[in-house]
Image 1 (spheres, rainbow, N blue to C red):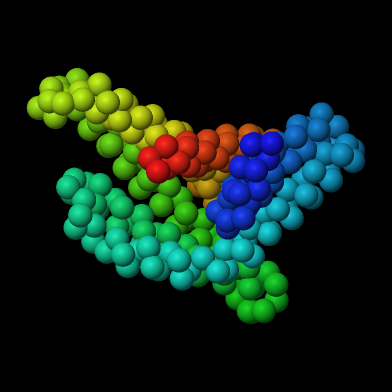
Image 2 (tube, rainbow, N blue to C red):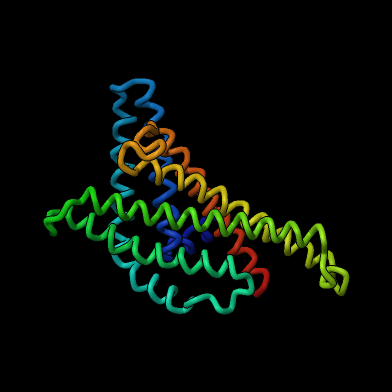
Length: 239
């Protein structure tokens, strides 16, 4: 009952619903892709792939309303003057810029497909995917840097670890390392798919079968859900 209540609570938020829709969409693509790979005439597989496409379209529609929230976040973060690490500050600012530009490009591509605007949707889809890929690359660079810095901190603990409550502080740093490692894996899985959706000729673009796209997306989605659950649990414990 507690799990059901937690799920209902999560689905009341936009982010919670988006995580569920994303996870279901990629799971449908994974299973559907496997079934179609085994038999091109698989009716269940074809239906699951169609359902996955609808889930993806649903998320695209919902993202039409994300620009304002992203702008507020970008404005609040600014140039990241509160960040102590200059590298983290730079990649975070660039990542926010890439995310901010991603949304209008995707909106224009969607509007073109919906016959609202008369522009080349393929070009705008490519541009939006490129901004997404750039944001993922910056996120990967940030996570790698943070893991290295935190591991270095564990190997050569500063005075903070030798003062009061050293074990608690060490556990906090270890938890941060795990969080950054999970974010790194999630971004790597998404980046692989982002490159796949770029025009043919760019690395492995267009070479992934549907089941592999579904697998990578499912891994990324489940990691995101796990991190959200962990963050919620920590927030409840703190309160």
